[in-house]
Image (cartoon, rainbow, N blue to C red):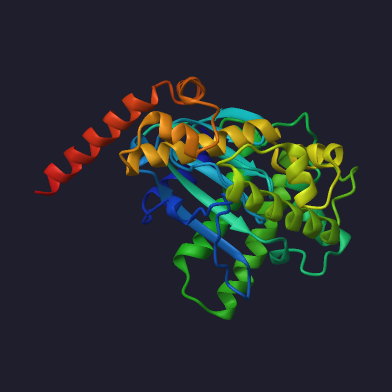
Length: 330
């Protein structure tokens, strides 16, 4: 482990952590955050104490802002779109805007530094030079994984830049001078990320207007899916609802979210089924009917394929866990 990584981990482990705000993910799987008007940038140290009880709940989400996280302890596996990759202490992982993502597995001890920001934090006017600072996300080659290993020779410079940004965020009191320092350290971090992810600026970044159009269409599509996923639903129907041809919508959905339409719809239905199993006494057959599955067998096969447990066993496991928590409270 290089000195910059050791310093970053030691400093962040001394700071206060907060619980990941999974309950703020809405029916479209959108995770909203409120950003400061002066500089739309947020840093948070997160822990995930409830992860082992979260099987079946809504961990997958998306947002229109940029994100990176630094694994501070523990191991896990992360998914963004179709990309799945493991991460461990010291790794830096980038999340592209609009991609549906989330942690698939993690140790209960896992903690992370999460940095999120809007493009306006660095490129409010959309100027080409300013947007080049976002090239680690916008111009990263598909051949380059969105993960920088902690032991990578380039990680030291990135970790050093992140540490300076974190010190400005956590140590200094609100002031104009703090905002100025945050902006400088933030730009330095983006510069180091650009170098580390090999983005040489050969590709043109997506225009602000085009991204806004994609975001609006994505919101409409996911909102439509959230409202109608309990019934028989076809890709052409959703395409018509957002004003696109079926072929164009298929490509748009895959490119924007990173998920195939069928995979996403099945995953959304499984999430709804898990919630009904936890919160109601409806039979498995009734849950299947209420969530858009062809029948009970279809739900059972899909549920076990994803979670490694049958719907009924999941319900029993959840009720036993809930009873244990209530007993502990007494």
